[in-house]
Length: 161
Image (cartoon, rainbow, N blue to C red; front, side, top):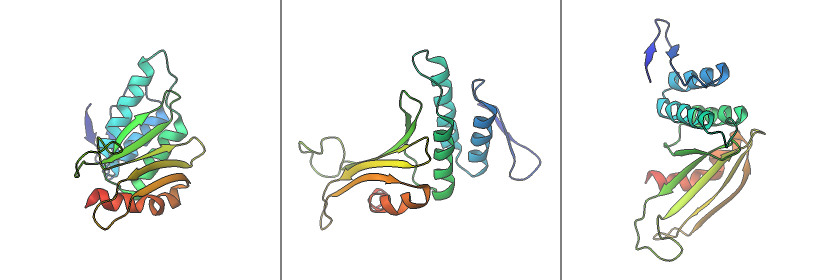
């Protein structure tokens, strides 16, 4: 993928997947211009993968826009970005395994998943195991773009510590 900045500040000219719609390209360019190139690259890969797989539909445009808005508004730590077969996007963070594994927490000390619904809402679920004086965290619900960071803040604090 080749990207070259134009002579106009804050405008990015990019070459994206030939399968990306003009709207998707605009979203990807917007992400790059806001220093979220990794997110744009991953979304571009998903656009390509979905277009080349006859078993699935395209990515849901509202979900693509919602993911972009989330990163631009909140600048969270970079997660894994995945898509369901129906084209809805999701992000996932895992807390690294710091304690001895047990039957409930074999691969990590916590996980948080957020699915970006076509309605613009974000469905989230996950948990983190108890560490030291902190109790186990459990997350589940649906939130708006404006509310989501408040809802997931305790998990993100553990992620950055």
